[in-house]
Image (cartoon, rainbow, N blue to C red; front, side):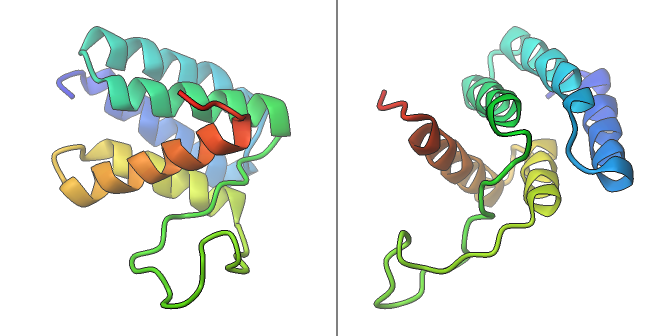
Length: 124
């Protein structure tokens, strides 16, 4: 991303989450970020941001687990008992969005998108 305002808003959202948790006040900033990434032709980030603010609007929280580094052998993802810390999970997603040149960050963003799409019932 070439837009310095993008990074400033990401930092503001993360600070808001740290201070007050996940609230409706961050939704407008997430929407503003989405406009910026669309302008810079970043479709993965645009989809991730849209799904994120829609998820928060619908659920009043961010109940999407941080992607595992390595799957546990013999345990299906759906069967794994996962404790989700919504603020930590959302902060992790936003941190991944700060450096999209890192392939691991892109992989994690894609997993977040897949999980949010599944929860939203989106099949496309």
